[in-house]
Amino acid sequence: MRTDDRAAISAIRSHAGRRTSAGPTLVLFGALAFAQPLPAADEYVSKLFGTDQVPTEWLITGAGVTDAPATPVAIYPGFISFSSTSFPGGVFIPGASQAAFDGAWNADFSFAIPRRAQNISFQFYDLFADDSVVVLLNDTPIGNSTFYGNTGTYLHQFGPGEDAVPFTFTETTQRTLLGDGNPLFIIGDKDPRGTENRLRLSVNNIVGGIPAPLNSTGDGTAVRMGAAISWTEDYQIRPYPNLSGNVVQVDDDPHGWYNAVNFLNNGAVVVDAGGEFTNRAGASLDSTGSIQNNGQIILGGSYSSLAKASFINNGAISVAGTMDEAGAFINTGTLGLLSTGTFTYRGQGGGDVFVNSGLIYNQGIFSILGPGAWYSGSSTGIQPKFINSGSLVLNGGATATETIDNRGSIFVTGGSV
Image (cartoon, rainbow, N blue to C red; front, top):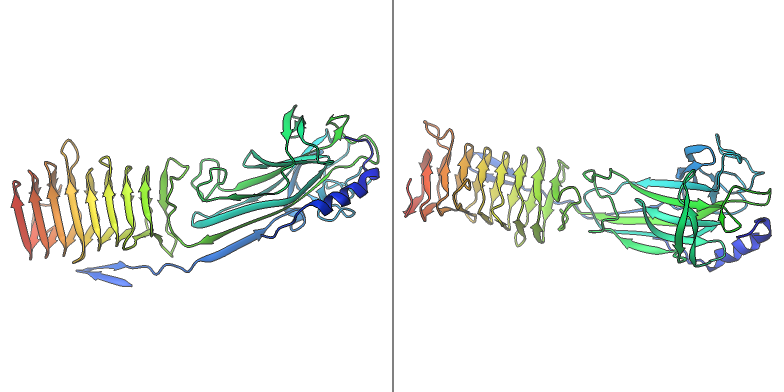
């Protein structure tokens, strides 16, 4: 683009002027106690990490260094480089040298977004480089700029030692990205790409229209960009598939997790040991994938399985709403129905069975419908596995082989017990 950057200092300052900156209880059930978590109040998180805010937290690769802290450019506020002046005569960061610079360098900033983050908003602004820059989020280009604001296709080298390739510059110097459901972002620690997001500034020095080393004492290289991210943390599971095999992971965060919307899960829901998931009254959870509970589920709304999805309960489930299961249901933990709770199992046979080797406490309506068999591997004996003080209904060819402590009603229509 030019051979002497000193002659263009005023151009940098005038360019700076045309940029737009932006800132960015306990429920008792029989002998069991089911914790009813009080959801944490929404917490607002906001972070600034532009080159002007945290210059040395940007890590440079190029000019002979790898992941070395950048240096602020004294004469150009807000800029970073591997030279304190951006020119060959400046103080280079440890390990960097003019001889090792081939025309391309990267500055990386990494940040994590927790799984409980909602309403994610990311923005960058005030992007400018000497001579050109491409902004990448997790290796996807999201912005770009050239010294003179040129648009069109030019050669760009995306890293030291790499070949220059054609890239179309559009002067996208500011942009806002919303993160909820956006595959560009890494959210939580279950994404196969890693646990942190990488924001990269891919910077080139241009001589004669191509990336090249610094060719004179007046030839320099530097970049600046403002950046910010914000989100709220309200411990609500995200109502869209997770990138990691469509698994919705409920971890052991002490606040617990909850669902307050109509949630259609196309993959699996896994509740970790110590995890707690509440489906609030009025909310629905529909699953075409499997659910495995190793912690605690409190169902105040409705749950239904679609496409014969399986449910494995190794923990505790408290049902005050409605629960409808059409696939295999394996209970090795505790399943409790409150007086307002309804559990309906619609087994179709062929492996779609209700297997209980844990404990069931029923104060509501518990129905086994269809030809699926209900049995327990260790139900025979003195200790009851089913304590019924509500209504137990068997219909449509369902069978029950179970030790039952019946204090309520049992209705059998076309089935056996």
